Image (cartoon, rainbow, N blue to C red):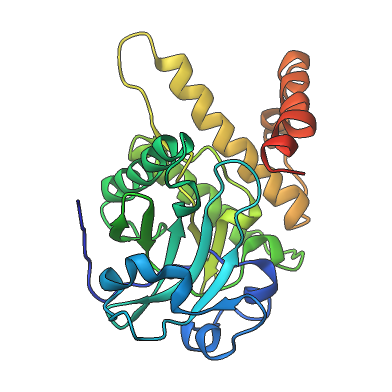
Length: 264
């Protein structure tokens, strides 16, 4: 089994209830204030040796996301070798046909993060704890979806530059939304690279690569307009607009297919 360890790292994909209060929220706060979602060593007993604890130790875990719907992971803040990490855990699918896909998702996200090589605007991969569980860097700070509307355009400009930097590294995120952007000291950090892909560079794929880049930029501009409450320029508004067929396809995905996959 592959085990990648990077010392002195931490990850966070927080729920809006946990991080909305302050960008300076620390892992110590999250671990020292358990609520009804806090579980103990029984939840992660089969990977506790990789977390640096023995079977009798109590491992405090703070859930950030409960698995609801098909192929959704449990996401929780816990400890790995004495440091706070976020674990994305698909073990609920162990022994089922879905485990094959879940294993691929773990390997895929690990590979995407490794290829970014410690880029400061994405979490670092800490370790593949098991075929169905991945530990990543904890990013302290609130989610962009919880940020109050602001007239400061700097944040949006930063996000667009970060997305462009990601594209320059030949990668598209494919799931840019307010809940997938953490503000670490006011600086955007992209999280959840499950849907990320390498941009194709083969002959004849230029149109596909350009479409994927526009998809990321379009969703970044939507955050500017809807989440931050800032107006779009004429050029930005034209980028956000889509054709009728694409609108229909996205509406079908968002209103019918996606809710069923999420178990709604």
